[in-house]
Image (cartoon, rainbow, N blue to C red):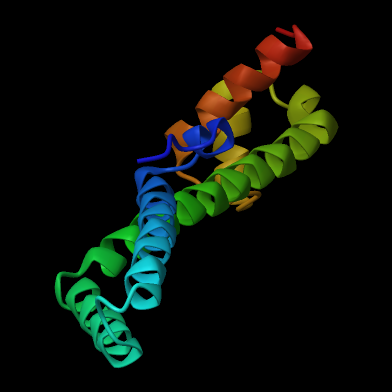
Amino acid sequence: MKKIPMALEKFPAGLKSLAQLMEAKRKAELVLGVLVKEGVITPADLIKFSEESTRVLLEDKVWDGIKAGANAHSSNQVSMKLAEQRKAKLFVWLDQNLKKYEKLDMAADAAKLLEVVPLGWHQIRRHITAYCKQKNTR
């Protein structure tokens, strides 16, 4: 089997499996084309083989696994983007309001109470610590 291009190395296993299946399909089509050309099998046999291989793939849930892997990767990217947006929103609030609070815990209490971001107190507090390290304050 042909080696998967380096660009696909960054993608999840589901996409790698899809690439492998596509490469196998391409090779099978080449071989079957030669068999039809040489008269070993008929075009009707080729159609029957194609339908049967599709049915096997669907029954064996191969495609479901590939799709699930791709969806998991996409879902993870969405979650990471949402987390970054929340963090950025909290940092903007901290830029404007952190100086009003004597202690960082008090700022976390206020951010939680005002629902600046939909996070728990401990997560907000961790972000405040990261903000302070980034800004080198307190």
